[in-house]
Every structure is written in structure tokens, then in C-alpha cells.
Amino acid sequence: MNQKIGIIGCGWLGLPLAKLLIENGYEIHGSTTTEAKIAILEQAKITAFLLQFSSEGIVGNIKACLSNCQTLIVNIPPGLRKNPEHNYVQQMKHLVTHVETSSVKQVLFISSTSVYDDDESFPIITEISPTSTSKTALQLLEVEALFQQNKNFETTLLRFSGLFAEDRHPARFLSGKTNLKNANTPVNLIHRDDCIAIIFGIIKQDHWSDIFNASTTAHPTKKEYYTSACRALQIPVPKYDEHSVNKGKIIDSKKLVRILDYDFKIKL
Image (cartoon, rainbow, N blue to C red; front, side, top):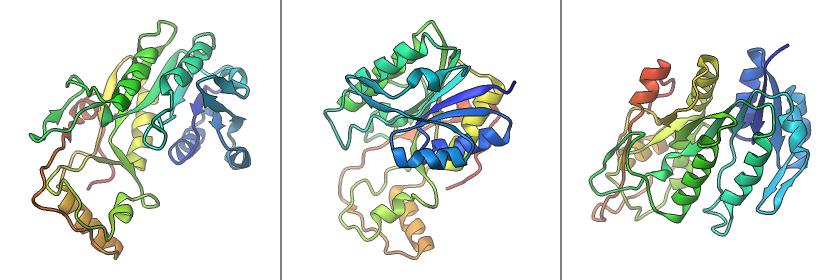
């Protein structure tokens, strides 16, 4: 019998991840919040579930989604930028309650390097660097702890930098804009293909109860990178305010590269 993996959140990242896992012999239970996407998931040979999360609870058959899954990938962004009043912690508490009584033994929680602060000194950030006290970071850190401190399963935290791919490139969003800040701030980005390969590597190597930062190892300045990227895409370049104060950080992925023996596929 093939190992079953659950993916909570089969969207822009989760769907191609699910397809790769299916190609490699895994059975996938996947969730979406949109009824129209059920057919897309089923067409990809995913056993699909409609699940919607709120602070009051989970609407949908979460027990069936988790049924017989040994590994669970939790890929639900906090959504606090769009809706600062979201109670992300409460939403995830409902999920954890179901996971701890299920067959799940390992959880891979997709987090973010936004848990670390920016600074004028551009600090090099490792997995043991101090974390932020911003409202968004504190919610994310509390959810990380909910999973990692639970004794019913093992959790690895994967903190991604800014995700991009050809169909979702931040250069398109910045194209033609003027008076942008942080011209000399280091870029921290990771391509979706690398995200998927890293997740696959963690599962294949059965590496749990750990924390990884994940960012492409090159860190050009924002002005350098986005000017070059926009020119390559043949769209208007952004203009930066060279006199504003620069705040940022450099995400260090050396631990991930060493432990998983990983070589980033997409270079900046």
C-alpha cells in the first residue's frame, strides 16, 4: 500500500507539489477552499476535500481528509496582510486538535522568514536568530509552536522567503513604480520549483523535528535584481529612492543545504 500524504492547501504551491508526489508513488489527500477547484484536484488524481477554516472551526470533512495519512503538509498562509483581524492561531488550533487524534505521525508546516525582523545592518539570519515581535510574526510563531511542541506527532518547520515563479514574479508587481524604498536591501527569494524539491527532500529523507530557512543563496540588492528582472521580462523598470533608509536581512540557508544535501535549482 502506498504511503498517503495530506496536503492542506492545494493551490499555487500545493497543487504542483501534489503532482510531483503522485509521480513518485504517493497517494495524496488534498484540500481546497474553493468548490470549483475540486474537479482540478481530482483531474490530477488527488483525493480532494473542500475545507474552509475560521476561528469558529473547520467546515468540511477534515477527518476524512486526514484519514490514513502518515504525513501532513500544512500550507495555509496567515492572510494577515489582507485581513489583519484574522485569528490565524485559533484557526490552526482547530486543525491541530484533529491532527493529534488522526493517523498523522509527521507534519511539515510551511512558514515564512517574515518571523525575522529587518534591520539597517542587514543581519545574516539563521534558524537561531532572534525573531520579530510584530503582530503578524507573533501569530505565526505561536502557530509554529502549536505544531512543534505537540507530542502526538513530529513537526519540521520550513520558513520560506518570498516565493516566485514565471507566472507569479514580483518584478511584474513592481514594474514601472517610482519612489520605491530599500534600493540597497538584499533580496530574499525562492523559486517554487526549489520549494517543491526541498519539501520532497524532507519527506524522502524522513527528516523531522527541525527548522529550516529556505532562500536562494544569492542576495543581490533590490534595485539590481528588479531592474534586471524587469528588463529580462521587457517591462518598465522600477525607480528607487536612493536616499531613503534601507532596512533588510540576509536569509542564510546553509543549514538546509548541508543537512538535506540540497543544491538550489533556480539561481537569481
